[in-house]
Image (cartoon, rainbow, N blue to C red):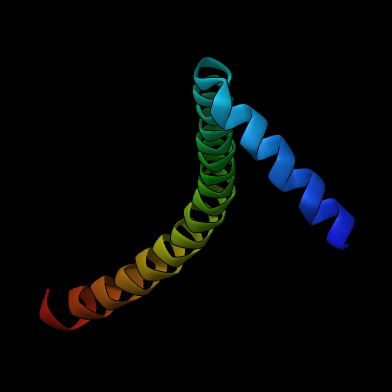
Length: 79
C-alpha cells in the first residue's frame, strides 16, 4: 500500500512539473466527472418521471370516478 502511495506521489510530482500535461489531465478528469454526473442525473430523472406519471394517472382516474359518483348523487337529489 505504501508503494502505491509513493508511486502516486511521484506521478503527481511529474505531472505538476509539466504544466500543460497537468492542466490537460485535470480538465479531462473534471469533464469526465461532470459528464458522468449528468448522465446519472438524466437516467434517474427519466426513471422517476415514468413512475410519477403512472402514479398520477392512477390517482386521476380514481379521483375522476369519485367525482362522477358525487355528481350522480347531486343530480339525483337536486334535479
